[in-house]
Image (cartoon, rainbow, N blue to C red):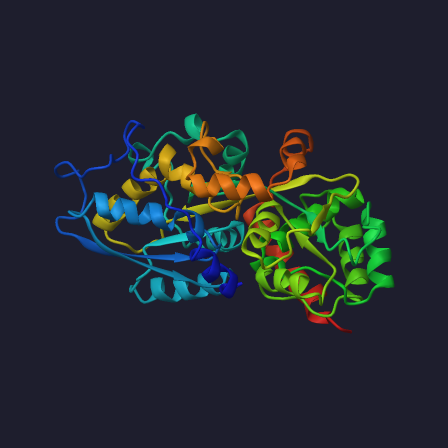
Length: 399
């Protein structure tokens, strides 16, 4: 995945500048001292474990440029989601936290909630942040609830699980989840999805199966997923291996070593726009489909100074302004992208509009409007599902 993410950065559109507008948010210029903010410029370290910087890095840089009195430099880094909680926990135990802001999907967010790694933002710092209930899209607002008051939703995507395939190699794509299993048995090693603990499409596939299979309780991976776990085990007999990130599945589909992979809206649009996956790749939507929605979050680790925390709260507010949000359309990587109401495609940079108009699929907006949308598992149950998948499914690959 790192190769694709790096490549994507080279095609990032010109992000829009700082936006004024929302009451209580920092404007485009630093005007005098703000209560609690650093008395001298500080350096910030932002780590991304979700691929979110593709959507937000330029806006973070715009904030730095607009606030030279507070921010001297922003250092950006990336890491696999499963590696972050242990690293952060060790820093906190040593009282040497050098990560200031985490950009995460539901995976590391859930692990951090379970391990007590994040600052509680609401109601503790509600006065320093915009009123999320007033500005977030309905879907993003539902995803915000999963943060358990410990992070802020910055981007939103309806998610998956969708199947992507090459029509020249798959003449009759599966139309039901049972047909997918039959196809995988008839074409061993030609279907693939990535490890759910580090893959958005992998998570969507895992959490979408209970709806497709009619399992007893789609929100309970322990006692309600009997059909799902049995299905995954049987499917696994026909899967060669599970990559640690989504990028590998896209590369293998594009190179021809796989014919069908699990995907979601952004992971369909963006790799085709970059040429990693051929433009002619098609999408299959299985009967009984439910969206499993997805989001990226901004989380502040425990252990930072009060000044750093005040600065980060101001930065989080800035990232929810309309122009910063418009930049999250990007090249369709997390389509649509914005988490805030009223941020339409016509507000996005021109090159973002061009890419999405060319590579988006007309039926996506209809599917978003009509198909049921489910939130992912709660933090505790998501961590359980990942652990069980690793032990019961991922560990048995090839056996």
